[in-house]
Image (tube, rainbow, N blue to C red):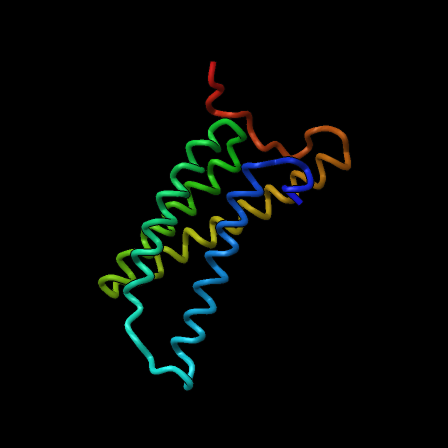
Length: 135
């Protein structure tokens, strides 16, 4: 939908996140199947470092969009940052899960705000003004 609306930020950012989750799910499925021997999954941490760098760039860009999106990306950044030591050192993934739940809650709020505000033709559920407007 973002591509169709000419929204390069959403189209790029959320396509990357979707493909990342798809890749992780597929490789975990293959890695844990009986067809392929179970192996070391510490390499996920190195992929997540790349995703974190991309996500931090998107977080900076989100400062120019709205506060809810900025909050979503901060939660994603923290979740990804906490998953890296999970894969490298087998530290609990529970803190990352908390930030992923926060991401989900904020995302549902943003989706509801966009739908309701668009249909109403006015701001009923606020998304917050941009934090940074470059001059």
